[in-house]
Image 1 (tube, rainbow, N blue to C red):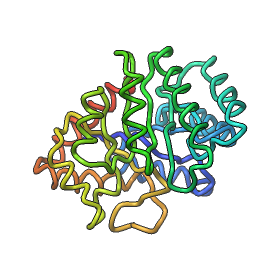
Image 2 (image 1 turned 135 degrees about the vertical axis):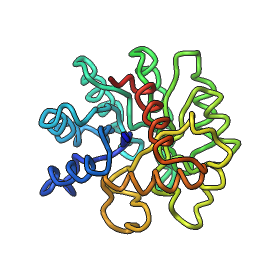
Image 3 (image 1 turned 90 degrees about the vertical axis):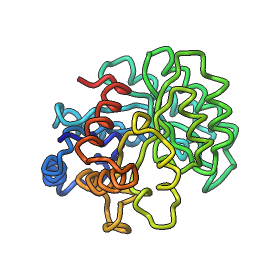
Image 4 (image 1 turned 45 degrees about the vertical axis):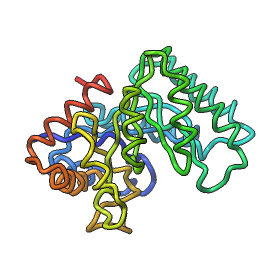
Length: 256
């Protein structure tokens, strides 16, 4: 049985003191690979250092998170774009829109999102999309930008069935994380309507820990709790869920 954690920030300082133990715990829970999304210029060194230290276990993405977009966003984009002169990135991410904290830089977020979508299309890479309080704009932009070259995943999907189907119609997968284990999230009811072929697994570690670790530091080993809950929701064997979601991840990110 093999799982892929398609979204975890294990390069952050929360893991500095025990990263080898975190990796071993993940391996012990059948997590064969972890994908690391970038945040902004401040996280690039840590991201690449972890990939260099454990080249067979981690894959890396490059992009600028919407919460790092402000008046200086062009500078941030240039730093991220320059990284693609090298090779080895499996996705443009983590990118998107976040209106939860503030909408002061909404226009800049939209410009940065569109710019990075076009990098992905030119580079023939998928995008990993962060969406918080911004579903309408995210869906409109994906609709407008879809020219047959755009593909990706809506990371930490928490939307409704109609939003899920609109994303799937545009060739996107849905990332299922710890939220599916939260009693009142409603995500389990939405996911019952979605075929397993459109889903991949993620932790978003150190954030969004699944039950029974909610409120504590998340880590890739906890992907098993997400997988077990999803298997229950989809009424399927855990081995079948592992096989399908891992194949979906490998196909989207072109993993060997």
